[in-house]
Image (cartoon, rainbow over all chains, first blue to last red; front, top):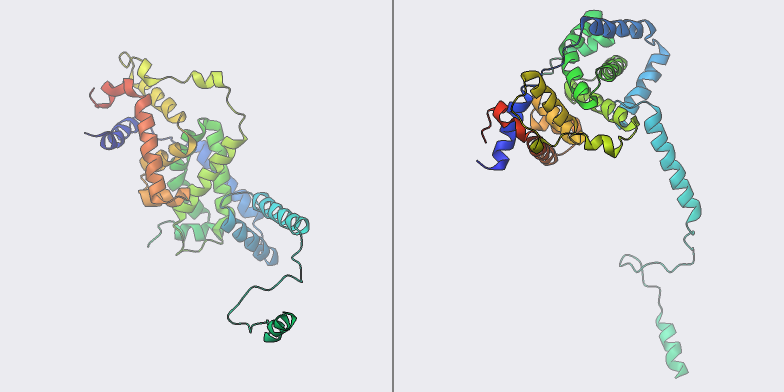
Length: 119
Length: 185
């Protein structure tokens, strides 16, 4: 038997000896009590929609995290982006445009003629 | 895909206490097992499960069936809770880490069932947190690899790699228990 095959078997045999945790009745009652508290404070009306929207957005970014975590990440990205935008040198407007097949050529035969006249 | 929790989640979000009680009864034991094994402290595990259920209630009204399975979302939130709590903990000093038993050095004979269980729990504790999470999801929560990978936000290949490394490390740390596990020398 190779190690690849025997490691899962060994893990199964070992882990089956660890009992699952059993929540005490008082703990389950505390969970239900917390639900009652939440239910009593549940936002309703216009604020419920705003609250729901914010929560849904936050949960889509980082499931389970408190609101400040994605907000901080967003703020940091904004600060970094703004900082880089200020710090980096601006692109010069008089820079030569790149060559493109879709653009008409900007050189002129007259310029060549002028060179030949000089010779 | 039928989600057995979807209806109760929607009802709990609308204030149905019975639906909330059913969700607690269905998931609290498994969540507590994951949290306890990840955090190794019963009190902290209970706090983490409390936080997960609070988050569940606040999101229940907005749960949209047809997307991810509810249980997948729930365990992802649970794991994030555990990771956050582990990160907030002070780093363990090296001397303390050295006290963790090296399996090969310990004799297996003379251990009773309770001691064997504690040895296994300790070996599991010492695994890196992502390996531990992968093993917990697959062994205790009976998640398939695809579901466990989705919970952990990994590809299936990455999850399988974590599982393989975790199981290998577990085996190396528990060599001395071979006689107890039916895995002959």
